[in-house]
Length: 406
Image (cartoon, rainbow, N blue to C red; front, side, top):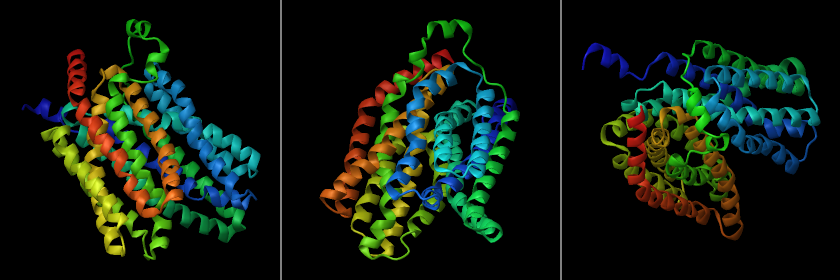
């Protein structure tokens, strides 16, 4: 390998570094606000049921907007679109801070949901376009850490800022401080966007051949996207029900699950990504999924914090192996110029998974108990394994076709 090739093989390109910095700041803003959303609704006098509905507007609007955001990402200048997307978050958070009424908050929450439809999939598209093909899984493993770090730090920043704001302006000042700090993070996230390299957009001929509705979903990416969706149905049960499960079981400090999960995720994802690039997604997927399924069995039998910690370790390492591997498959299933569509496909199915997981989990819980609900998660995970096995050879054909065009 000559010097030029070696330089190309690194994941630390200008575009990749810029998108990681932007993503960390944008996610810090998002998690700071989402942590206190229902608390803020209560402060404004909204009941628990309506507060949950308002909170869900963000994700529902994002899902409904994806048929529009997909074609836009496929045809418009991605650098400019990314800059506008992060700038919109800055504007919305400022509006949250200075419009303390339920009606206005709902309006701005809907606008924020439009931003969500572009946010994750567009960032993933730019990140993947900035990575060398031979290091796609390891690069995406590192990229995913930006969300994990933000998810771990965002709520803590929100706690600190709210306390500072309350000391100066009472409860209202605490919430305003959260929104203003989120606006600041959003503003900072815009800056690296100006330094992103220009990405090649489809040429005029390709745009003429591709009608707009074919840029909503990439059928080549459906198999890995649905594997991620099934994985999401199971995974969201942890974040939704782990705290009440600890109270139900009488296990103290059950929040340690999330700490262990975050720490081990930071360690496992880059290593798992490199192993996937070296040996292939089909080699790492099955042991990763086995570990993740084992975590639900362990958690369902938990009688002490030891079970919770061991289950968190299995879940973290398993997810750290599976997610980057399957995500890279979704992006490598399509021609380079259609990666924005593939990314939109992944996030559309993930949105469905985030909706179905708590819904199905709640239904199982109403008919049984927490133990049966966590064991229920084995069903979508088993379906994901079967789908992966059936779709592996078609994926190889799609990837070969994509590489041939590149």
